[in-house]
Amino acid sequence: METNGNTMTLALRLTAIICLICLWSVPLIRTGHAATVDEQQQTIVNPEQLRQYLENYLDQQRARMPRTKLRFRHLRLPKAFSVPAGRLTCEITPSDPRVLSSSRFSLIFRVNGKAVKNIAVSATLEALAEVAITTGDLRRGTILTEEHIELAERDLNRLRAPCFDSAELLGKRLKRSLRKGDIFERSAVAFPPMIKRGEIVTITVQKGILTVTAKGMARQNGNAGDMIRVRNISSQKDLFCKVTGPVAVTVEL
Image (spheres, rainbow, N blue to C red):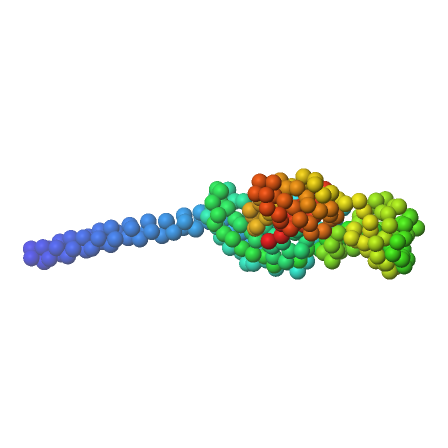
């Protein structure tokens, strides 16, 4: 009888130990399951997706410059990274507001509208377009005709304010001598001013992703690329601005 009692006691002890082990294992299993779910709530952004975001950005720029062939050169993409799951958007800002002179592009990733990742991508932009060039040596004071002008493809990154349309050069006078194959920069040709003194213009100031505009009055004549003095109508202060188009100037920070 004593042997049977010892056996039953031992069996009860083993049963209790097994029950304790089962109870201890429950939180461990739950913890492991939570970690798996957390990993599933991440979105992986790989280099190919980054390239697509940048190509979409280029498409937007191509719409603004329809005559220009744009492509990235020396594009350095980072390795894949993860962001929280949700509605993912990407905002791209060039290091130079003029875009073409940029050597770095900032990519801000947002999930459901909240910024979660900010990376910088190094790249250079190639921008090819047909521009007007000289067919031969031309002296200062030459009145331009069709025989003086032809179109050729050039990289716009090396140019300041080229002429794209040969028709707008016809009948204009050269302000300086040019050699054969030189590009007709607007500064070399006597054009009527793009902005006239006293004209109301739009002043644009851009810093990173922040853009501010204001109305101003031109205090000088100016053509594309010229720096002119403009009075801010609101503050009545004069600013030195770059002419970027008809009635449009920018402040370079």
